Length: 63
Image 1 (cartoon, rainbow, N blue to C red):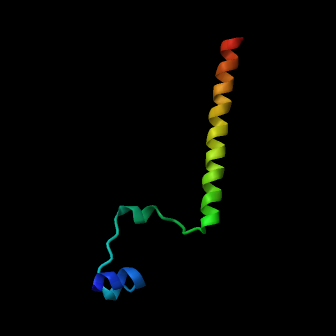
Image 2 (cartoon, rainbow, N blue to C red):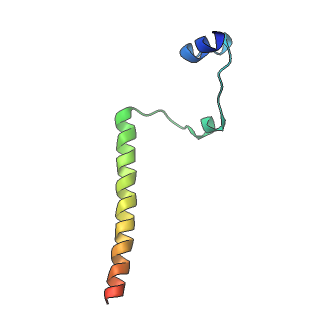
């Protein structure tokens, strides 16, 4: 159970903590509210951009 203690407490001397390549992609640990806000903002920007492209193509075809 040494490894479990290390995972639960973060004490690296208490055992092994397995971590993969993904750890290099983590730049911050936001609150849940901040994370959800980011996800919504990115989704709105993505959807807005794609909708604008779709509308432009539709208008070009109609002209």
